[in-house]
Image (cartoon, rainbow, N blue to C red; front, side, top):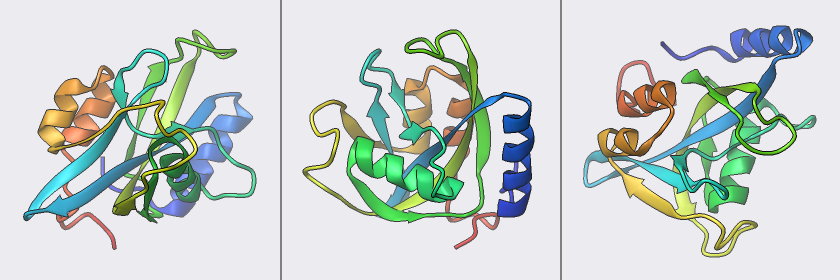
Length: 160
């Protein structure tokens, strides 16, 4: 899947919400370290699975800004999220009031400028820099694993 323009993404979100579908926004935090791409993975609070920072839509924020806000709250990430959606994946919610429901997650690349030592969920999750291939091996959701494995911010399809 190529990058999705903001207008196409917004139309998809409106259509899904109108049909009662659950949508979340995730950040794919990355950096170029020693000329190699690394992605920052975090663990979930409950199951301790490796995943990306993600959360529910926020009325006052655009999807990529919501993804960036979740990255800050869950992992202390400060950086710039791209407006173009990288892709999406689905998962079945295993905890909370939406348990058992399928959630669609739109993923936004986020170039990390720095990591804070203190942030809202400090101490509740682990965070780890990994190559996209190594990160993908730790991810339980197959669609997300493919998105992460194939991620290349230096490729021709990535917009600055």
